[in-house]
Image (cartoon, rainbow, N blue to C red; front, side, top):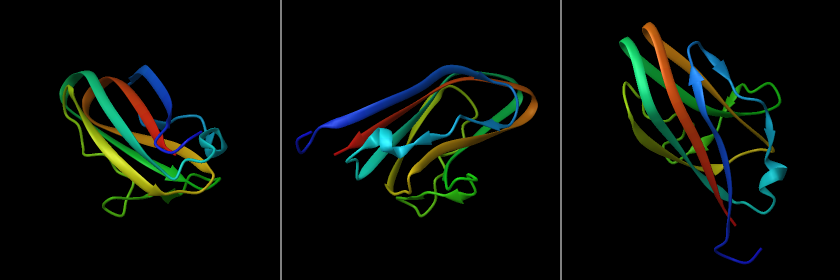
Length: 118
């Protein structure tokens, strides 16, 4: 791949109704990528006062936050439809994200896109 090219991955659309995490992805799938941008898009949110927190994590036990543009791997909290972006500049060979839902009977339909820059 030449300079300026990118590699992309997409999870979703997926329905989230309880706390959880995605399947582990090896960043070897991002061979040559030095940084990436993650975009969290909430297509819909229902329930009473629903909230969604999504964090990128790394390490084989998914216990370390990525170091991003604000020294953590957290997207801005979402409470309805819209999107937010997170830039990640330091990461190990593991890529994963965890999510936590708040409110009463929350349900979110989301898409997470990752655009890696070579």
